[in-house]
Amino acid sequence: MKIDLTLFSILLILTFLGLYTFYGIYLVLSAKDHSQYGNLFLKFLLGNIFLPYIIFFIFSLLTWKTIKKITLPLFIFSLIFTILAFLPFFQLPNQPTARWFYFQNISFQPTEFLKISTLLLMAFLINLIKRNKDYFFISLFILGFCGFLIYKQPALTNLIIFILAIVGGFLGVKFSFRNVLIVGILIVIIFLVGLTQEFRLKRVLGILSGDEINIAFQLRQTRLAISSGGLFGKGIGNSEFKLIGVPLMMTDSIFAIFAEETGFIGSLILISLFLSLIFYIFNLGRKVNNEEKKFFAYGFGTMISVQVFIHIASNTILTTGVPLPFFSYGPSNIIALMIGFGIINSLKYS
Image 1 (cartoon, rainbow, N blue to C red):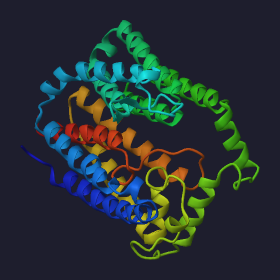
Image 2: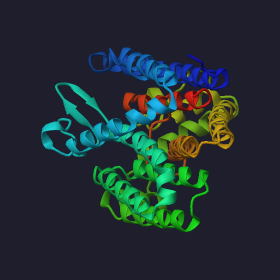
Image 3: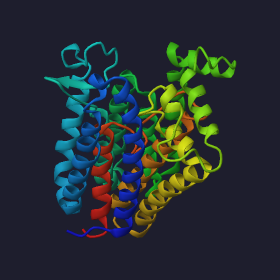
């Protein structure tokens, strides 16, 4: 098995930073409520580090030909479980959304795997799509149906990441600008329709009106945490806001805790690490001659770019959030991403 040292080194550094940041939050939460958070760090080690890296090594071993063979089963698996998550029998207790599949105390987010498997499927269809218009409309139907499922969960942010990743793949192989424009217009329409949903509209109007205390308390807290970090931060593990309490600080708001502890300099280093990772993926996409590989590399690079941007922006200016890769608690997201990183690693050697 060949592992690209540049890619692997960046992943390890991000993993270490994420582990240390999460551990600091865990100590505070477990001290407040040990019965609820007592085994959370163990879950993080298993679900966010151990299992994802096993998945990374497995997919690094696979050749592009083998990946092609398992793509359709992976897509079908993801699609079926995404649909099943809408059935009350398979929904998390007291959970009004359909984002999680739950059965016998086992739960995961099938949408995370749907995003990566659909990107792979489109990569392997790209040559057929270019040669035959029928395949273009078939791919639009697949994307439209998957997008509809994600939208109805509801998960507008995930939908934007999903579609932009596909668009990134198409742009990477220099697909017809007119057809990419069609998809772009659809994104704008979906985004505007999504904003009409009452809970999102209230949050947007609340921020525009300056009512951050009642409508966007999370955004207010994350802004205060980030600004309090100053230039060099308060020191690793010395966040005061994790003691006060920042909503969703293990997931959607974890960047704010990291920024408070490491300051502007630490935040700049973290963003530089993510940019290096994204540049590596795009550069690999530029170098490969195979259009299927190029499509996946550009699409996956776009997926990471958009997710990181939305997470950081949600801690400063936006009203929604997604996990920060390697930092936020969320095994489904990081496992799906490590599938992608494993494939990226294998592209150089297969």
